Image: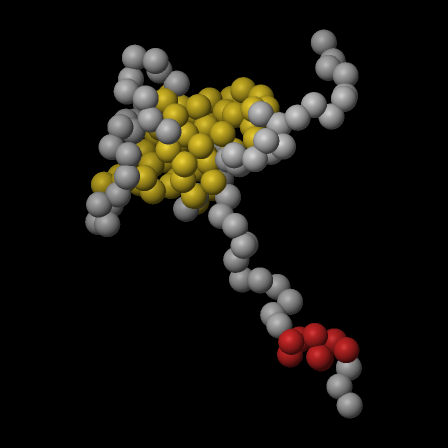
Length: 122
């Protein structure tokens, strides 16, 4: 006779190997003098202060300032935060894409979302 735990283990893997959805970031240049682009990308590597990802966008340059929305979502009730970041790395990758690394400089605040009725502290 098998226990319910053993039956559950046979039925399916209790811990999925990867998340069902990739966390994405919305990225655009902060300098109005530069050509504008919107880049929505998944992440290859993340640290507390930076992100590394692949992009087909050739406009990234080391030293370039960016507005980054994390986690990116186009849903109206999303809890997206926007950050000011700076490109610190640009690699030409063998697959024809660019490896882009940026460091987060400061948080700009919430973008989109909805008001839950909490008072704003001044």
